[in-house]
Length: 357
Image 1 (cartoon, rainbow, N blue to C red):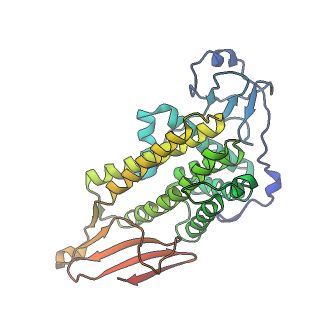
Image 2: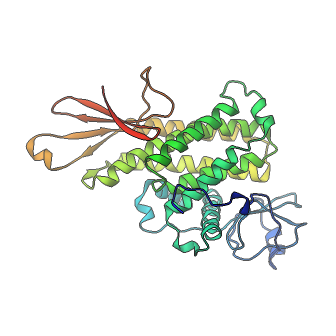
Image 3: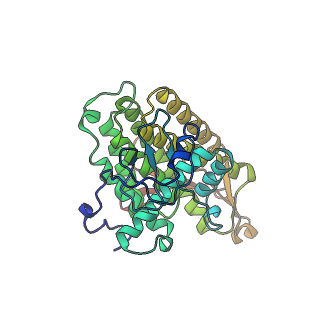
């Protein structure tokens, strides 16, 4: 099966919740403080006490203790490899591991769930899955989840924001663009966590917060795609250098996005409606501020042409404001300082083209 193909039979991997057995140490977990996140490597039993959030095989997954006043989110751990830490999104994840263990653990669980899902689909060891393969399966489940968004969410208007149908459409359109252009190797951890956030939204009973989340996710998926374009460019050009403060700003942005996705997963999984809207809006505002800071920098490419007096700079990825653009275009300005010419690279649906400015 190719990376862009769906599993042969979606019915073989039903997303319905399943019940497994509780570990012997569950009594110790019950005494843990509210919302402690810890690792779980054994099966869960006693369905009266535990409900599995996703249909993953035993080993690494998220579970929620349902019959306690103080619910505990149980999550598996993940340690980025050296190769992964060469990428911005994984560095953002590592930053959360250093500063916000609870947020990083819920994201680690989402990643490990997708790795285990690869094992189920391909009958191959989870360790053999590439980041891209893990992300592709997560995005496949994401698109399935978008197709079954509850009707009452679609029909209920959300004041001051795009309705659910528009948000779902924007997310789907960007996914299609990435699928036929960059694929999902870049930013795999972000795609997986985005997929988990969408999945929990489809199952949540909290209508208003989930409407807000879907509106935010429509903006976030565009942002993820936009910065993945830039990261793909400098991964392919080894002579490109990033200013340290710009690089730090990009990592901060990735951490803010991943933190938001962690908030969504926790809020929706544990059905925490109180204060959810304010927390989500504040988190989204920090993403927007981090995005603004990143747009204030330029990336300089140093190559052989510099010796001949030609220097190229790539302005940070940004949306096009021209009247003939559409929501599915992701633009990158490429400026030649000597000639003064400037072109914009577009990723449109199914094609890559250049447009002179």
